[in-house]
Image 1 (spheres, one colour):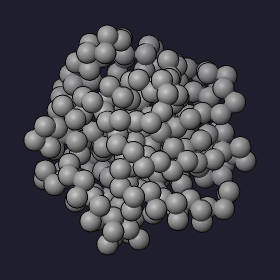
Image 2: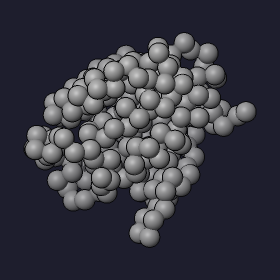
Image 3: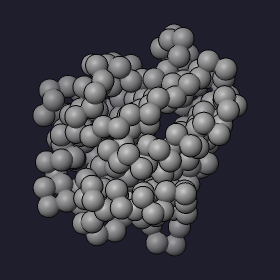
Image 4: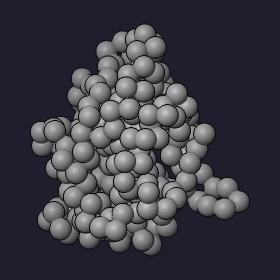
Length: 226
């Protein structure tokens, strides 16, 4: 099941804790199905791996929820990766634990692994420049639904920029129009006094919405090189 943004309840912890308690056995993919996302991202991850020269890439799934994106990426990626599933809901993390345990090391690369972390996306328990990839699949959208959503989203994005490797990439999947999201990302770039470059592509179109993949890096989009 895929779900789109709804009302302000999506920004409240109580809503997600209750939902994951009673609905934790049913996969919920935010905005776009995990298979489509992983199909798009896997070649980009492969190119990033070549560019960095790292043995393995650290990938953060920010607000992982009960999507099977971590499992699908671990299965699909031939590149060695460590998936960090982060959510403030214990129910979501327990759901991910069950799904990833059932994977039984059937990863695309035998060196790949995963970590499960209960944490607030506005206070990430990781060191600076730790992640080569940060995937934000609707989490910023959810924060923005709150009464103080812009402030929360800024706090989360500041943390993302802090933990993002200098050669890393932030991928955001959202249905927010480019004229709004690009302005928001530019304002954050100015706020943290760093220069970031953002591009976007249409990931999926239906009869109602366009769903975008926004790519933010510290420079040119090296991952598109051949």
